[in-house]
Every structure is written in C-alpha cells, then in structure tokens.
Length: 234
Length: 234
DNA sequence: GCATATATATCGTGC
DNA sequence: GCACGATGTATATGC
Image (tube, rainbow over all chains, first blue to last red; front, side, top):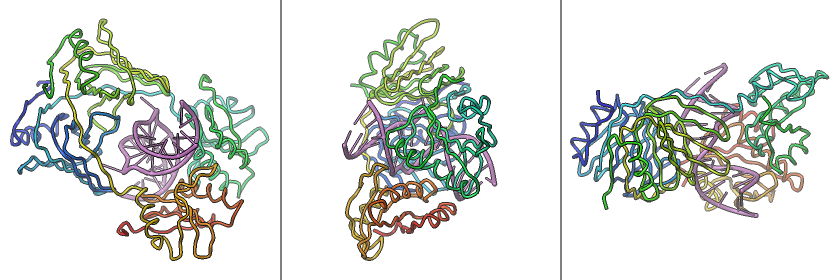
C-alpha cells in the first residue's frame, strides 16, 4: 500500500471518485480555489480564494487560509461529507448536533493528496490536573497542616478542584489555575465558597503562579486567599 | 509563478533548501515521519509516527495527526523556524512571549509542497456583538421602556456588555450570551452588579437563548433576571 | 446528551 | 504588552 497518492489538477469527476475511494481510510489534503458557506450556530461566508482543505477520516474538516492558527471554517469529528458536481464542484459537510453545514464551492483543484497517516502517541505534563496531584501528594506545599479530602467535589454551583481541611479543621476550597489568575477565577471560587458556607465555615484559596491586579483586589474584598504557586515545586 | 511546487521524497538537504526558499512567501505542507517535543507553558512529547506539518508564512506551525480538529502540536503566528541537519532533520519553531519551543525530529519526508495561497474574505453573522446591536437599535426587544446608555461600560471588575436604564430610571446591567447561559455567565453578571450596586440601585439581566437549570437557580438566588432571547428577533 | 471546566486554548480590543 | 472576554471555541469527564 502506498503511503500517499496524489492527483494534479484533477477534473471534478475524478476528484469525486478520489474522495469516495479514500475518505474512510485516508486523510485528504486538497489545495483549491473555492468559496465557503457555513450555517449553524452562526452563519458565515468566505469569498473566492485559494484555500487548503483537510479532511480526516474521523470526519474532521479544516479549511485553512494563508495565516492564523485557526481554520477559517471547519467541521468537527463525526461530520459527514458529500459531493455534487454542477457548474462547480460542491462539497458539503454536515453535523447533526448542533445541526450545522459547511458548503464548499470549488472552481479549480490544484492538487489532491490522500495520505495514510499513523500518528504517534502524545503525552503532556504541566496541566492543572498535575498541580492538584502535587498538592494531594504533598499537602504541605499548599500550607502546613492542610489535609485533602475530595478531588472534584460536586456542588450545585460547580465542581471544586480540591476540598480539604486546614490544621484547625476548617473546610478549605482550593481552586487551581495553571496560568495567571484572572477575575473569572475569583468569581468561580466565590461561587463555591458561597454555596458551602451556608453549611459550614469555609476558606477559599486560589492557587496560581500569578494573579492580575484586579483579581487580587477582588479576592481581598471577598475575603478569599491567593497562594502563589512555584512551578518548580515537585 | 507556479501556484504550487512539490518535492517527492526529498533528501534532508533539499528540504532544508526548499524551506528556506519558500517559508517567507508560501505555505509549506509536509507529510513526514517524525517525533515532536514541546516545551513552554507546558511540556509534551509525541512519539514516532506519520504527521502532517503545515507552516504558514505568518509563522504559524501546525502538526496534525489522523484525527481531531485540533493540531497535536502547534506554534501560533509570529513564531520562527530553523532547520538543522543531523542524523535526522531537526525543525525548531520558537516563540518569544511566552518562551516556547517546538522541536520536530524528522526521519523521513514523504513529500513537501509549497503553495501560493491567496485567501478570500471572511464574514460572519450571529455573534454576541450582533445581539447587542439589535438591542441598541430596538431596546424594546429587551423590555418596554429600556434605554441603552453605554456599550462595554468599564468597571474594575470587568466590562459590562450593555449598561442602560429601565422605565423607572433604575440602572440595568445587561449581559449577553449567544448560546445557553451557564453558571459562569451568572457569576460574571453578579460581579458587575456587585460593583455597581455599591453606588446605585441596579438590576442585572442575563440575555440568552436558554439557561441551564443550575444557572437558573443561581440567578434567582442572587436576585438577578433571565431574559430569553428569540434569535428570530431582528 | 447535558453540564461543567480546562486549554500550550486562540483571537480581538482597549488601555 | 497586559487584561479581559468571546469563540460556530474544541475536548474531556461525570452524570
């Protein structure tokens, strides 16, 4: 089996055949002149231009332009793909929930490639989850006498990253942020604290490598605490 | 000028030349066998496999696998690209703020394409911004007697989507959500209300096409209001 | 499927 | 450059 197959300047009909032959087994990469119409949660148009179209076998559709990390238009995994040949070649990708459609009107196909892509295994370190794991393993990193009780403690107003008790036995709600904490993080913590303090006395601690000025003011005003997290803690 | 140039199974040296020739003017598309190391805000490894590498002339780097809409690894616009030829071909993309690096170790190049991509113009409708515009143009869509005063009214605790007065002259803070409103939207509105009510009596209204059950309970408990938005309003 | 929260989120805007 | 909030966010997880 070839690793990839390429067609240069194919006709609409041969691209249709190419797509139906390979769309379930290969990643398709098309460089075309096209315009695009999207309707669904919003509605958009992309006028005539050259665009890179990628279709993955899981149904993902990406339409990339000449810059930016984000595709101009897309469809997530699980989307269908159909083609129609009219004056132009029409490619339609549909998603059911929410109901969304991307219609690509292709006037010229520069090239099309089908590749047999076997991706490697991916591992990542340094997420928020690992900050929590570290505090569970070494509770003194948060503060002396802290005892973790429950990870992802559920309340009607959201899930607490880590619930514990301090050395005096007071409940402590801990919210972790891997980046600089902003206003929204303080709001989030406040929401949990407001719920739990109806039942018990409770402290709220926001753990992050930094905090914005506004967020710091707000956290003080609301009687919550900020604990700076040194990422070298391990 | 050709619309695209392709090299099949190029040597490391010829790919290096290809990249330096075209990286500032073309989008590069490489299908290779490689492994990838990322360090920066987090740290990750991607083991040996076949991956699609896209490099845009704005510096964007995308490393796609066989599924999902998101790239496995990436670098945003503004990133640099350098190559080194050792036992394998090493591609390194760097970003300065934050300091981040993606290192690609390439063992085999299936093909490389440089494309001259002139993207079309993009327009979108149905964003939150347009909901606000509609209420400003037709304030009665929010409620009878509402008068808009200020778009993006700034407070130390965030910016209010729309500030206005009701028919009795009471200040009204309006927060818009284009999708179903969740707990975080209620928190956000509460933050603005808490700030402004220190100075004036104030109402807070959350406008969205729907609201989750928890968010609805919370909004009532906090004395705020929910106004269902009918998207057909225009 | 719904709701919640994270993300190497990215991106645009205002200061 | 920082901070804040929107995004057709996508993605994972728990229910």
